[in-house]
Image (cartoon, rainbow over all chains, first blue to last red; front, side, top):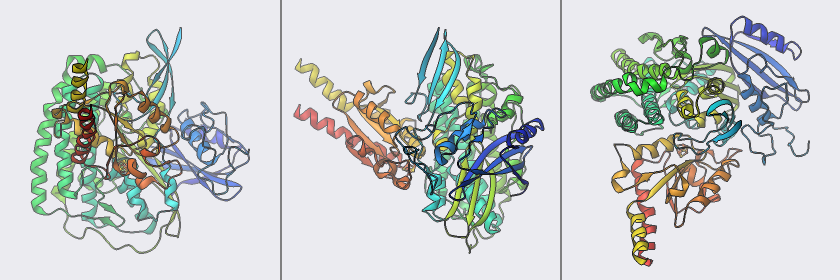
Length: 121
Length: 357
Length: 148
Ligand code: SF4
């Protein structure tokens, strides 16, 4: 993977806005669990077939600012990550509260090896 | 007065369950909220139990309609990770089977779309033509839908000269068939009245909302992942199909023209098909990260893989084209009439099973 | 009255109306079910009609695995169908969960939720096999008629 730059929580929304103004198209997010405390989130963008990525090391406990105010289409994938990793996104355009893919009855966080369940939060 | 009309999950025009809550005012849709999750299985997680070779079979079943292209993309990712050079013949064969899949997917969609605006015999006609494509796949690979030809390092099956001649002669029938429905699909008065100017997506919106595939190209954006030149596309010459208007009719026309283009691409690939091996032996384990994109019948499909040198991948992430096309759909719906909703939903070619994986 | 009853029992066996529901299938089996209804395989020649309303249906074709969300829909559709009714599970997924049985969001085969009469194996099941399955399910109605 080329063209990856690291990014911090505070700079996230501003940097993404810059991308948008430069005419980049939002592709998707990829999230991977790293260890007990943190996840690795990649933001993928595309412009005329070229790709560029942001890498964010997100602590699980702090909410992540949502970029759905910049790119509306991000709300789906952010909801998906909420479902699967039990992360929290702040300021989502539409918040499904962890029921986008999973049913209300499901209380586990499937993608977290070290996850906490929704019931005992 | 506002009313909420539930659409789905079981609906006659949709073969798959998707649910939309439509906010309706005097027959005019004013808002739409999707509710998905009826088909979610969670197969990305399987990469922790199955090894990276077994995962090919799982990736094929992300979506049965474009299974060969999913497997192709996954194999290309693993090959990139392990630095495997695939034989030329295998790259061409992958292109051929990939384009056959695109053909059958587009014909399937043209049929369902015709059904959504009430042309049942056209639906039957498209599916009849499609059966020829299915025959070609069954004869060359042994299966109709999930053809399982891709492996890491190449393909599993070869085409002999006899088969190639037969495939070319069958393709002639397919081409004639597709041309024979052109007048009904594109020129008919009723069809034009039902599709022209419905669900307009401007070029700016399409880019901003991250639309993909024919939905994007129907809005006058010439972007197709095949331009990246993976498999044999760089060598056989490829130009994306673009239509200017951004309405349902444009999207219909893009898919129709792409069907004919696929036939042409298969012919070109067969024409240039190099001799040689069809696979190489692969040693080692995948390690590192890759991000790879291919063009599926429905648009750009993104794979992100992360390996740690063991036989299981650490993370497999799949972003499928319909996932990207749902936000454009949500902005297309407000302002349309309730009776047009099935047409608009179908015009993005929703594939729910790959959206939810 | 008896005449009408006989007539209905006979039509049910001779011209069953089917409804197709997709639980968590990968589409492979779905499109094969649809292929059955279109010109090459054409089950309509046996009097089989595809309907979209569970209240009209005699036979339910289910493809795919059951997950916690769609099991309620499946149950609901089954309950809405009038008696007697037949259920056909299609594909390895519908039988046992198939390739997806280890996934976190999969409950298992269709028979975990509703009773199944006929199982059609295959991944995906061939259209010929699906037609055979429908014919098998008709045997159930036929025997009901005899007993009738
Ligand atoms: S049985 Fe196979 S083809 Fe059918 S839905 Fe399941 S995975 Fe797909």
